[in-house]
Length: 302
Image (tube, rainbow, N blue to C red; front, side, top):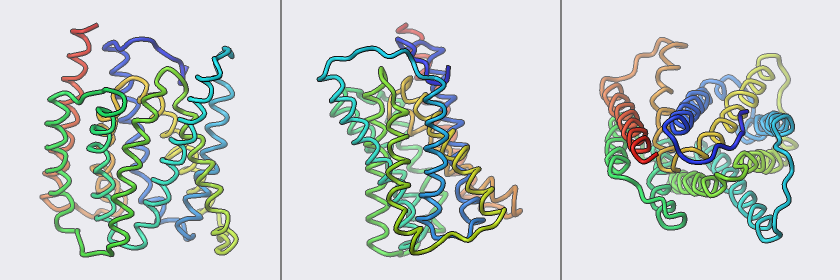
């Protein structure tokens, strides 16, 4: 089952987690193309796709729900708190990302939001005692170099407020991954479900102020984004975060900005610059090496 709980950390579990996060990143990476195809207000787009994603996740939750087990009141209160906190964090990440894109250069937003692995490493170490291993610190350095090479020609002065919001979205994204990791023995998908519900509710005033234009193309794009780009991706992220540390999950998700220019090349024929290709290669190598070392380590300790 997609949301089945596996006890322990074995080589197979870790590989399954890495694969789920990798596929999640592939789905996330399609957002830029499809958002451009929808002629709606950005917050309306975010809320609409989150509404579809919430319905999709409710369906998965219903059909894969484990048998109810009574829990102590303290444990129930803790799970409710973590679900609410994580939901608010991820909803803030999605909303801040959209708003920041309107206030500053998109390259600035992506670069600043993907400080999230650093935040996840620090917060995970501080709050859940998941100290990053040497290969993860090394991967963080390589990823930083790769991101710089990808976006150095696209960085602009931008707006200070937009840059600040993008940086905050990186913090909330990293914090949410740590919160979901604390629920590895529970249901981290509930965090993603709560986030999409919050995001959809937040968008209601924008839907009233900027009514979405009908059209087959718009509806199909929103359905794809809701079901696959963030719906299925959310389920995959929840599955993967149960099996690998938060910092490793976000390192693997760094494949997302690498794939963005690939989709542009496939759809529009626009070729990325050589530094961007080198940067993408460095990020891919960093993710692959840290993942392989992590799997090898878990196998020796299992």
